[in-house]
Image (cartoon, rainbow, N blue to C red; front, side, top):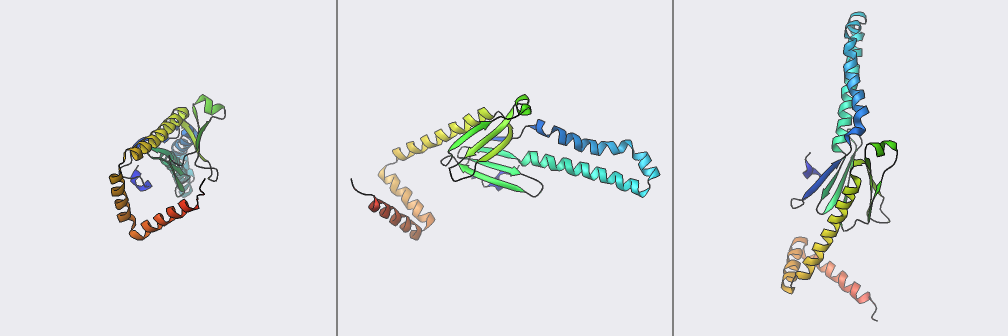
Length: 211
């Protein structure tokens, strides 16, 4: 999988890539295999008795079986949760041409919960992760993955580490380093944008009532 096309930065470290449990796709893959294999058991009567229609019927079953199998394999392969050291990237493949990508920064992550529902999810040890980035944002559900509790703990730990590192970084910066950082930001975003940000901060400070 080419992960760069999902907007991952060069300095972003991938911690884990999580896909759905393969057991979920056992019956779709079995159905695809049956559609491909079964016509060969009837290939002789189909070709002899049906003529051109037998060939068409045989080709139809082969096409449907292969197409269905490739579709299910594509969905399994591209449906994944990418856990990096900075954020979560959730990719949902819903067909050959339908795909949604959601990105949640650890700073915006509000809640992550685990749900196990149904007999099969208990027997085959899979569940769902429900990820929320705020009260106004929709909850994103990553379905049918294994080791949900361990993944939940990993994400919470990465979030705490990022917050701790950023707080430590801000505390250790000297005035000179902060000035250099401000100059670099000004150079990248432009003087006009930098001035607008400074004016917004000044207005916010003035609007705070004095006790």
